[in-house]
Image (cartoon, rainbow, N blue to C red; front, side, top):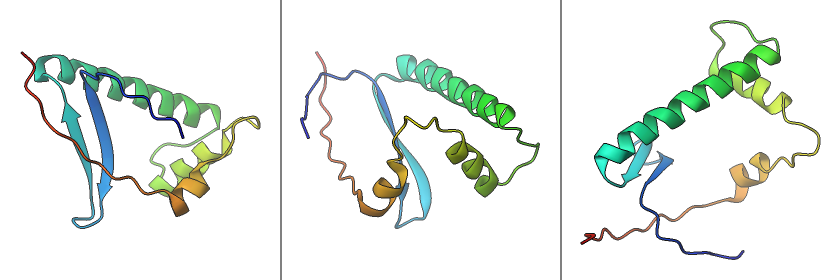
Length: 102
């Protein structure tokens, strides 16, 4: 796998903390630019999720398992399903160093 390093000024990383059994979020960037970015991405993600469920004939008040099943069933045939492989084999190591930008 090729790794490209870029100077990233804002990023939001979601991960699952297995020790605490909670979803976590790491934010990198200036809060005044990061908050609107987060809200915009959250809004776009929710709209896309609603569209997918509506197109697939989903119903109101679906459980998490039902939503995931609808999402898995809506992938076009050309899209490879990396979910099962990543779910079983992938491990992410997150290391970071905070720098002050002058």
